[in-house]
Amino acid sequence: MICHKTLRCVVLRRKITRLANSNYVRFCSNNSEATISKQPRVLITGGAGNLGTKAAERMAKCGADVHVLDPWAPTTPVKNVQYHAHDMVSLDGWPQLLDDMDTVVHLACCNPYPGCTWVESADSMSVNMNMMSEAAKRGVPRFVFASSNHVMGGYKELGGPYGNVGVGGSAGAPPLRPTEMPVEVGTKWQAGGAWHDSMSYAVAKLAGERMAEYLGQTSSTQFISLRIGWCQPGDNRPESMSATGGGRNAEAVGAAERATAVYPNDSYYDEQTILDWYRLMWLSNRDYQQIIERCVYATLPDDVAGHVVLNANSENDFSRWDVNETKRVLGYIPEDNLAREAKIVPPWMQ
Image (tube, rainbow, N blue to C red):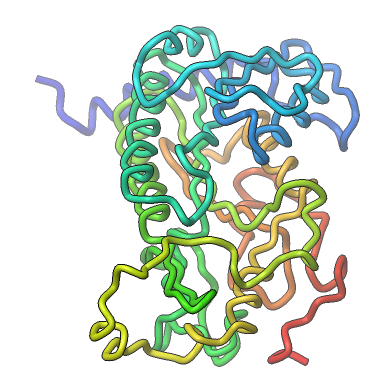
């Protein structure tokens, strides 16, 4: 019988050998066509949506062999991208697309907004498990999973030494580093006279991270989980952000429970604090596209083995969403900053 430690060494040797033999480890230069001896084959799930279209545009511009897997047709197809229409909740018709893929960028979920229902959340978990397990079984070298800032959204409300007195890290609140801070799933806010939270959405993302952790330890596939900030559709300007960004409507919560609920600080009710929280996790289009590119092309440091969790944000002044590890692991060089690009500084820092 092979012990777990021995199995882990064998898996890592297979993984390192496979990545080392690739010829596509240097980056596509800044928004220009790249000349690389062997371009990677990349499958982008959810590639007809906001994040997927932007990822497909960048990878196609880099010259990669890009395939999109999405049950919905794109509004505007990206040139030189092949589209495949399948529903990933089941295993019908699509798993063979993973054969000979170099990287999967998994952005698909059944509802891409924090206001998803628990049924949609459960279906998203099925999509994640199907895609990750099939990729690992077929030996895809690298798998990029789109997790979310909502996995850490509870820190907006948390009091004590980890709390957010001034959500950007004032009063000694520590940076939200994935390797150092425990999860606090679900962002809460109040809008339109109703309570909202992103718990159902965040739980599916956290479950995906844990699935990636397990498969990263037991297969030859290397997993990267990105806790993506707010990258809006279209031009994605921070000025267009609002404090009512979606979330599960909690009208079903009884009046008595609402009346007696106690939260550690008043930011739950403060629209400006909620807006600051969202703005400080802004991820510009070009920073997002660079992160995706780096995930595909980068040779990761030797200390990164089966799975790594990284924040995906622009480098915004006063933000608790620390991207130093993202820069170290991926070679990410942020180009945008909320304060510089939009001249937005939270009122509590003025």
